Image (cartoon, rainbow, N blue to C red):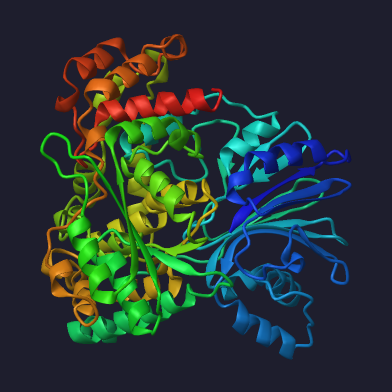
Length: 591
């Protein structure tokens, strides 16, 4: 887990080592253990390292294999690298390190760009072929690892974070009105290739991009999540699916223990993280470290779920740490939390993950986390609403979108309004793609391959890596996700959602955690904005920069200030926090 960056020029000029150093400097917290730069003519790569596998200098990056003529900058972890290494050794390859980084280099040499189909892991990388001058980039199936791109007058730059590209200079920082519409409508989800800045784009997940020395580019998607089912899948019993799910999840959790340092668990007290702890205990892990966080309550809403995380920690005898954050401390941490965001992310639990990661990083470098289970196994409340729907797009939008297109154009300033409903059109196009006929499957595919990538997964990457902490997400093991896609939706919707997963969990963890009401990462002080929080957002939205930008209509802002609690989105978000967060993010990144 690291930070990568690079520059390719297409006009024959040398790549800028200074730009690389500025980018690696901006990503120091992603990789605090070491820094590396390799610059040769028109191609330069940079790297910030967090030592997880092969702690020696032999694992440092950018990694150069002079014999094969390949240079690699890689962020992530290939969980099945020991098996791939053995296979490559059987083909005659020799290794100078014990890292998964070197396995990527040898695999690329053996199988070319299609080697990514053999990787089980999270990754974003760029590899330079010395002989051809070609650069190949790839991003993992679920986009767990980020890869941002910026065209420059001379060529192309890439980095693991958007702020790193901004730090290098030559980036168009104009606000993209399409991205703005996604942010305001699609619950802050801005899908690839867009970002909030016109000059920065994202490589889509599960994508290989091949860039020739003259800048000519080809791109292909190497994986998609298929919800097609055989007759045998349709007829398989609930119990069979439950057992298959548990077997596959055992493998996914075990894979994510590969490391040369200890691995802990972020324990929320929900089914998903509790099941990870249970499976690790079942596999014989001793001395497991677990971590939970809680906040002050507000407006009568409780700010922690310690009763459930305590239950699991006691049941399995983990080395458990509870972190309680007073509202004053949370507010103090908000500016740094927002600066840690590569893109504006509206969910309240960003600050929770940021502060949790700060404390956890004092003890371990790697954790497993439960993100992805709701999107893969149908845990959200809107899936039953689209089941059997005659208008799945409309029903999905009603449940998930923060506002209609008509209301959006009332809320935005006049120059930012668009005639076309971009978010609705995007969902319609995605639902229309082949490979999913059931409305629930259409929603699950959208959520697991789009929404998940640019909300929960991005949130966890940004907030953990702000403290040099690697987060691994077993529910996004692609083999587990492919199995889940084959399960008929009626089995996933059973028992109030995640039915198959809940029944698999009963074989491992206490029922009290499974039968509890569904919880969320509660940060009440950001949902019910009042007192110092209200003063803070007033100052931000009333600042000179905000007024000059004019993103939001004055009448809309005044309504929010007059009655912050009245404007709550269908997903229980504060509209005032949404607009204030965006403006704060823009200002903190010099926009």
